[in-house]
Length: 230
Image 1 (cartoon, helix red, strand yellow):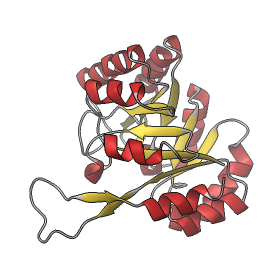
Image 2 (tube, helix red, strand yellow):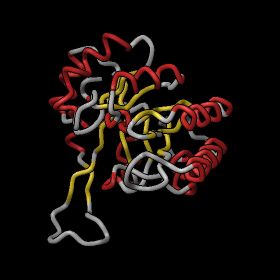
Image 3 (cartoon, helix red, strand yellow):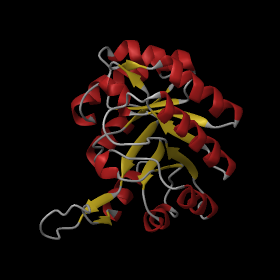
């Protein structure tokens, strides 16, 4: 099984270096689902990691229905990340709750030019017709999908994800993500899914939530337990 861990900080990067993690999804603001990190952070992570670094392209929180200007900014970000050594990018473009084929094709073509892998993230789970969206992403030539199988989380979608791997796993990499626990990781491992995405953040109880966000520590126990499945 190939592990991908989503990270925000250099301390988290240091924590995974000794574990059999192949890919890192680097992002900012995980509390809103992840946003584009700074170029300097990405460059520093790439220079100080043995892992493949895949960078989130998401210019803002909220929905995934972006303007042309927003898409152009994300494509320029892609180019910058490619130049500092990123291995891939993670994105999801929708239009009226369907895959935005025109914008997605534009980004994928630019990624291909730079030799980057592409992951269509859980925006896919918000499509009005999940299977139509899935076929669109496959036809566009994405490397992989990060998905909970069309459900709110992988616990609800675990059976659908197994079916998905069996039906389209030869055409696109299927990577479960969204609430992965060690128990669910074992379920996917035992059902022969080849890729897994999870985070290693554990909230620290610091009293009332503030406008500046919560504080987290690294869940080494979760990281260790899941990586035992390797």
